[in-house]
Image 1 (tube, rainbow, N blue to C red):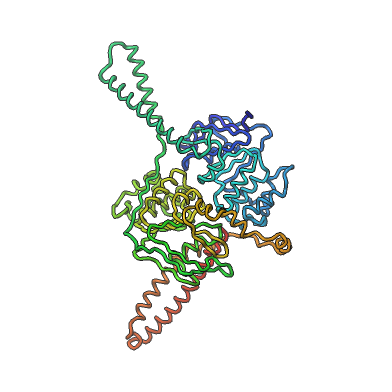
Image 2: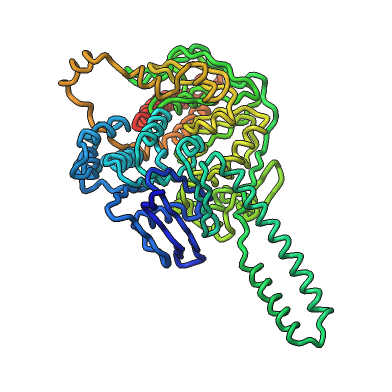
Length: 603
């Protein structure tokens, strides 16, 4: 058996408080694919940085075989020193590497190579960093959440690409299907220590449960022994001093052992407050169409969503998934056709970008709405600290600004706020982002047990399989088709997955590609400007204010005697109403243009 390429022994690290990592071990042999799993905040990313040589531990040894090459996928890559993405990716190549591979990877990851670092979105920067890590085919690849910001076609391509490499792999991901497909061994980082299982992630959860059950059994035995020894201390001390001193010492040692034991991190306690029952018909779309300039987003779609349905929406970035949700829920009107919403709907939405969270508000203010210290859940008041604990927030975080929370913590906060509201229609846009596997389990169970209706957008294939009853798939050019079952069922019915479909639809004959090659390259992607981001965030509230003013003016104008009684007031109200309606139409167009641009950029 070949010796390990990389070894970490007895690693410990503390960041000014309780130890983050107490005793971690990690080794990877040539060609071995290992997944590193653990709860949010357990130190997985930090351990990967130690393996990459970017963080120095307080204690322990790191050994890398001489001559072995390591590439690390950074969470926040820095491209500022490079003129474009191609130069950044080529900088990762070694002297003997094929320069064509840099161009190949850039194109496969949906980039042109000409993007300027100053104008790139976070998602584009992550994809460029992934291309740079893969380009030299290193001996060891360290990948921290490589599927973030990737859509289904690229996730499936990446899976295939990693399988074809001979590199050893250490992988952190929340995507179960991705982990199951790639991993051969599993390292579990829990309460500062690592445990290793020489099998892939598919076997992890059963193994984890066995470990935790055994720990609980050992803790129960220790508690019983402590009780017996404490009873002896009170009633059984005799004149045999030496034996008593030794036994008393053992009792103190057991008590110290019990104090130092760490229990497994608790789990999120999700309770979904269900509203009144909606009507049988929840959403009915009749031949709706929507276009962004010359680009169709939805074309002639007819769809019925009934009470209790769980609809998954699938498509590549830029296909219009968020726009489709906004059409189906009445947020924006279609260009053609009509959408009818059912009766007695109580809708709760979890948006993909978490824009509804105020970064300056504290965790407690976000949950209570800034009013008092209680949260209303199903008509019952619960103290905000107790509700925070249900979602794994410590009491000390009550006054923590939302802006400093991690991605996983922000997502849990969004869930906590959303689930406290009564609902019979859940609209979830990428709810799995940044959630650990245990929280994903509970979210899946909650959706399964939910009596209402669910509309769900996700790139997580396993999550879709476990939660939805049908999927609506983008076929390109604004066409959407519905398939019964989850993602795997859809692939079985179509005979191909999302990646194969995208490649087929986008592929052109070689002669046509050659003829179009001399034409100007597409303009580099950019990111939203500050003004565009500001408008995108503030326009909905401004439009709501305009709609309220319009409603008041229409109420005034509804008086049939107004013109004869007060012509000046009638004229003033009429002019103001026309101006507001024109301003509202312009604001709606601006918001729609920005929303489509944001989705097209994939930010």
